[in-house]
Image 1: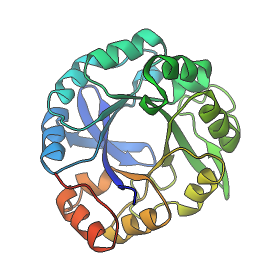
Image 2: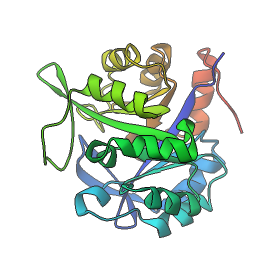
Image 3: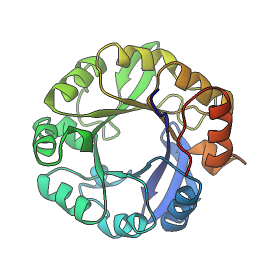
Length: 250
């Protein structure tokens, strides 16, 4: 039986964590280091730290914050935002990252995925896929709005063929809404690739997480549910284990 992963998703802006709804209206969500320390103590399986302004501002990763967060982590740390070159990746790894998440950088330069996989292995390369629902049709979301995005399923297939070992699938239209996760979207992605898929967006209660894992999500990334509710990872893991999911406990 596969272990299902619970992964806090931390969005970084100007040295602070933020959380919004559908990628907008971000509110302050705390200090990166102290939040990482709390998630570590509660037994997070992994941690994702995404600099949401790096690509839009045309700059590299926030290495100082990565270093501080990595010092609090005894679980794998995935970092993303501003990774456009092998040197950016090296800097992130040297700062304490275990995995690299590429989204805008891969769209601009698809061969970046292959270069990263050759150096670090496919298991260390996560392809970030942000999708919004456009009248029932999934559309790849590029927050920079610089060009027409490719068909999402074609892009996912290509990204895995280029060397991505994991997909982080964010349903932008559900993000921060607490209305439930997009299981139909998950199924569509799982039908075209055979790598692990981490689902994010819409989790609002324990039943939503149970449903996502029943639907086959290899892991669930959580933001709002951990930041703006009384839930914590210990409570969530106990519930999911009681529902029959194989969870790792610290």
